[in-house]
Structure formats: C-alpha cells, structure tokens
Length: 116
Length: 249
Image (cartoon, rainbow over all chains, first blue to last red):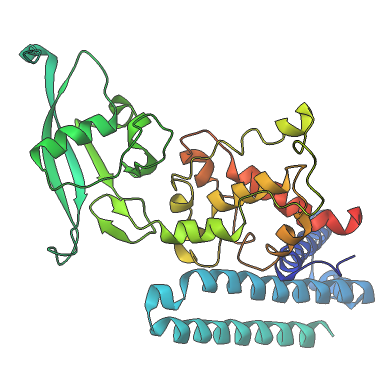
C-alpha cells in the first residue's frame, strides 16, 4: 500500500500512526488505573508482568521514539538553520539532533531494560 | 476649477507609523510617524491614506496599480495583519487614531513597503501553473462540464498578491523549500482541472517532506486572503490525493 508514497507522505502517516498508538496505550493504562480500586505495587507489578502488556508498553516507547525523532526534525529544520543563524545554524542543528538522539536512545534503552 | 474646501469640523488627524528603509541611504530600517488629515464624513482606504502620507513624504515608496483589489500590487502588513491597502477601509484597522504599516514579512525589502517577490514567484513557477495536456488537441477546444468547471471556483480567483504566503511561518523559515499557500492553491487549481493531464507528475513533485508537508494547517493564509480564498483546504485536498492515489490506481 505504501509503495508509491514519497518521503513526505510516509513521514506524515508515521507521525500520526505513532501518535495514535501512544494515545491508545495512554487510554489503556489510564483505564487500568481508573478501574483498579486500590492500586498498589503488587497490582502494578502484576500488570507489567503480563507479556501482552510488556509488548504494548514496548510498542508505546518505540512509537514515542519515532514520533519524537520525526517531530523534532521538523522543528529543527524550521528554526535551527543557516538561514536564521548563519554559519552557526548547521552546527546548532547537528548538535540539537545529536542531543535529541542521545535522549531518545537513553529513554528507549532504559524503558526496555525496565520492562523486560 | 478650484479644489473643494473641507470644513474644519469634518477633518481629523491620524498618525501613520510607516516602515522606512532605503538601502542606499539607511544603515537600518526605522519607523516614521506621518500625521495626515482625513475627512470624517466618509471612509477612505488605507491606500488613500498612504497617498496623503506620500504628499508629505515624497520619498515614501510602495506599489499600487489598479486600486481596486485586482492587481495584487499593494499587499502590505497593516497593523500586524497582511492585506491589500486598496480594499482595506481605514476605519476597519485604525486604533486610537493610529495605523502601523510594514512591508509583507518574510521577503527581502527593496525599499520602504516594497518587497522583492522573486522567491514567491520562483515557488509559483515550480507548480507549473498552466494546463499540461498530452492527448491530441481537439478541433475547437478542450471542454468541461459545468460541474467540472465549478471545481475551480475558489481557486482561479487568486491574484498572487502574496499576502497568504508571507503570513505563513513555514514559508518564512523555508521559503526556498516550502512552496507556500499561494503556489499550493495554484497547484490544486490545476490538479483539480479535468482538462489537465499531468496530475501524477504534479503529485510526484509534492511528495518530498517540504514542498507541501511543511504546512501545519494554522490557517494564517485563510485569515488574510483579501479574496476570501482557502489555501489550507486546497493543501488538504492535495494531501488527501497524495495519500489515497495508491487506491485509485
């Protein structure tokens, strides 16, 4: 289905698909918190011991990583450019992308270690 | 013939704060206050007020031609919002007897209220704003049904004044990559035209991450268009066409 989509169309769809995944997971987790009478560590731990919930949580963080990477790329290619900052623009852009990438990898690794 | 004398009671003074910059003389731009007298018994347009200001400051420069919202020459930033000076009543925009005029943002200033529109027209050129046909020409003309022709309403009326594109932040940041609302409205005008036979090529040209997809739908373009057109809707139509054309094949 996506074979004819170009770079822009693919990104447009991926960003929104990731946002939907995160929304559904937030509602799912929120629903668990709301319907649970007295939430304690045991219930919380049992919830995340479930294999399906581990997978769903991992998918959430993966969606978060992709959404953040593409979203911040759009922001940085608007504001951190040679057009606005001159020669400094490219350095600022690459630095910002590097910091964002490091934060995403850190969060993703941390999340995977905790979940699994 | 003697000029009509306006009674003093029917005159009021207003201050026009106008962006001034002559690169041959000024090191940097500045705002100049020009006090003019306007009649109180009738409304005048911002362009008329500019003429009165120019009578006092002959070096003041701005574009104007038809003075009736057709040529699109006198697009400028009026109290922070883009518009055509010739069709903007002074009474609609004046606040505390003051009006502020600046050139349209995002384009290089040539002088005072005149901007260099090259970038704007370069982007328009990219969408090939003309009919492209591949089939043999019919004997007389390429016909459309009245319904097909109606699809072009709200698209062909654009006068290319630049008010929309220069009010769009995405165009400010990437004027060489993002085509801008005016060019994209024209793009949809020809994609929607049943006589055009280059739809696939036109869509292929918009598939990158910037040309069309930099539009975030903030609708500044719709808010400022002096002809009441809706570039955001046109952009949305193109995007839907891009995302669904796999199915239609």
